[in-house]
Length: 81
Image (tube, rainbow, N blue to C red; front, side):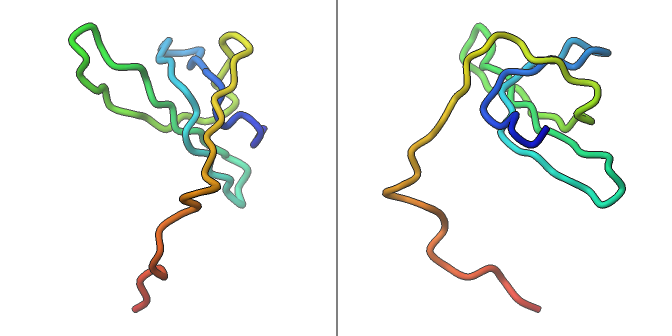
């Protein structure tokens, strides 16, 4: 289910809905997706939340994709201890 990045998903239990902006796969099999909701009526950002993927259902068929060709990531190496 890692191909859900960019899709809109809804949590079956709470009804929380948002675009999947992150996906985390654990060795235990309890994979999670980060749902980023739309801004509210005032244009204020709402907080994102992680959900177990088995709780999610897809809303619609639209998939958001971003072109990162010009800026593929941060230009410095990750910090080391």
